[in-house]
Amino acid sequence: MGDGRIMTTSICPTVAEAGLPSIAYEHLTDPDEAHLAIGQARRQGPIAIGPHGPEVLSYELVRAVLRDPRFVPAVKLVMSAQGVTSGPLWDRATQSILGLEGETHHRLRRLVSKAFTPRGAERLRTLIVDVITELVDPLAGVIALHPLPDDLADFHMLHADAPFEA
Image (cartoon, rainbow, N blue to C red; front, side):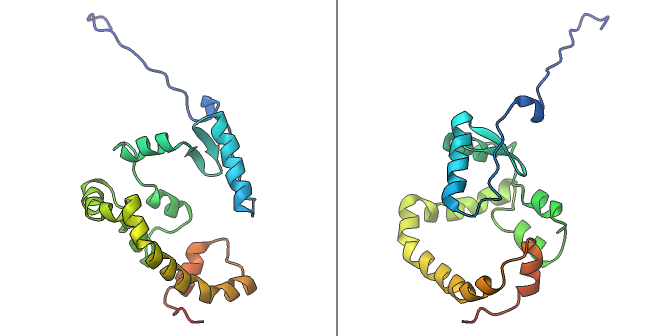
């Protein structure tokens, strides 16, 4: 620039150029095998390229990312990638505390944060186990006979109004 100002350029590698390890676990059916695969990737570094993009693997980095306002929930992005951009499932997911952004998310998070401390979660343990058992037990036989489809959004939409009956 002829007016004496200095122009600087910062070059940052893309995710593909960063040389991050890759991680694959979607083909695994045993959760222990998946945890081993994630552990192996974690030993190589705190970030890996997973089946859907970069994955943060260390507790410390996850905490930092969750507290950094530059990162936002990927609920809308993930649902859009699966072809869900409107309707009851979209509305429910994007209006949940996990799908909200900014001050609305922070206001709701402050309201419920005490329930999700380790001590608060422990107080809710029995209730959580009872609710999950009540929801999952009736489905155990159905899932064994009819495995879930690849597109869970379609499954949810087909069965959203069906009562849970044993």
